[in-house]
Image (cartoon, rainbow, N blue to C red; front, side, top):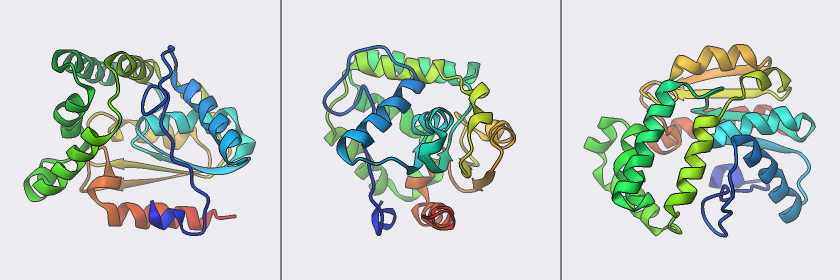
Length: 230
């Protein structure tokens, strides 16, 4: 973030159902898109922006760029997917079961989601880093289980396949080679569906390259942003 923030107005906000305040209403990924620009309008008066998102943030980004094409300068989709398939739904349902069993969303994230986000090599080579990330999750406002269920239901319901052709912004699409949840099985569908797009694979990463290989992630994403600055 510091490198991106240099010379730019940046906005990093809590999605509905996380952080504070909590909104206890059903929602879809498309609703997150509306909320994002409501935050931008209210807090900063930002009319047009570079949009970057990871995972559910990438799903939100697809909807943002499709619903509000005149407000998106560029789009960066990291570990995104156009429509949830049976594999994603099965994995996410497992997270829901684990959250209820542990009675803790933070512990479910650390024990259940982290292993999908990071490679075995990161656990072996940087245990202190994994611990620091775990401490960060435990230090955040604790998400109630019911709002996590709503949020993860939105992940399973995500279907923006028919929206890809509406995206006009130059788009960067990235995946981690070792990601299984949103794997490169979605690469061609996103690349072919979004006209002005480019694809990059982080060869040594899983679902969260921005944490696993910070230097490579910064180099690639900042290069893309610089190319479309203005």
